[in-house]
Length: 124
Image 1 (spheres, helix red, strand yellow):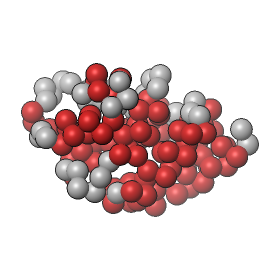
Image 2 (cartoon, rainbow, N blue to C red):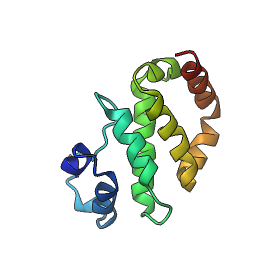
Image 3 (cartoon, rainbow, N blue to C red):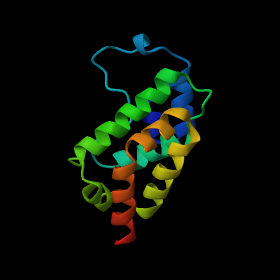
Image 4 (cartoon, rainbow, N blue to C red):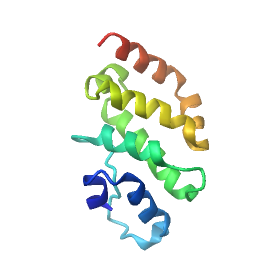
């Protein structure tokens, strides 16, 4: 899966996950995307953009977990997160959340953070 993400083959990466169960992976393995590090916001926004409601719930929850990690890695600061992503990544990320139930729920729960992120983006 890491190679697929690295090669920007995001839908194929999700299909790879969707064809398996969480227990098919070693307990110590960290499945991409990482919630932190170089390019993490790009990879996550692209995966969120191609996730489907029909994908297994565990895959959708996995992406939301990574989104939580991305926010935590920024110290919960929308301004800090905004500084590390392009406007295109911001647009992709925020738009993608509306495409599946867990994303919509996350957006509602984190509406204040998303409003701060939008404000930070508007100032860049």
